[in-house]
Image (cartoon, rainbow, N blue to C red):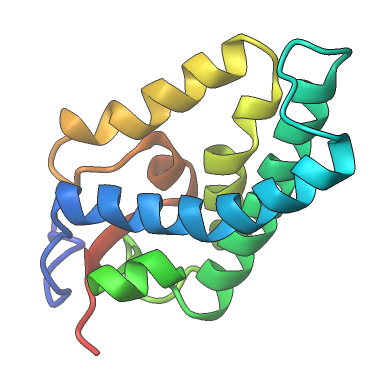
Length: 152
């Protein structure tokens, strides 16, 4: 069986992947946090489901951002800054359409589910620490993608 990564750039370093996610989380989280602060009158995380609605809005906005960027460019702003990209495992192409949106959904939407959603999200993102040979997180496995060094 041929290696699907043959002819593709090398897999991205896990540290670069982490920094890219931090950049994206700040890019979305800071402006959205300011908007949410004024919309909800503060950051009360134990007041009348306010936290749930804030988490829901953040999850949906991050899903839309991640899905759009992956399906159109194969990279988010954070991935561009770190010079990495998402590629289809079978051919290295940009995850256009369903794969990009599936990857974004499995990453961004589980924390919306109270309690167990955050546990799934944590398992999802640390999965790449022991996954072999492609260092995939669960959102990569769901979409059949890998994260590789960007050649552009």
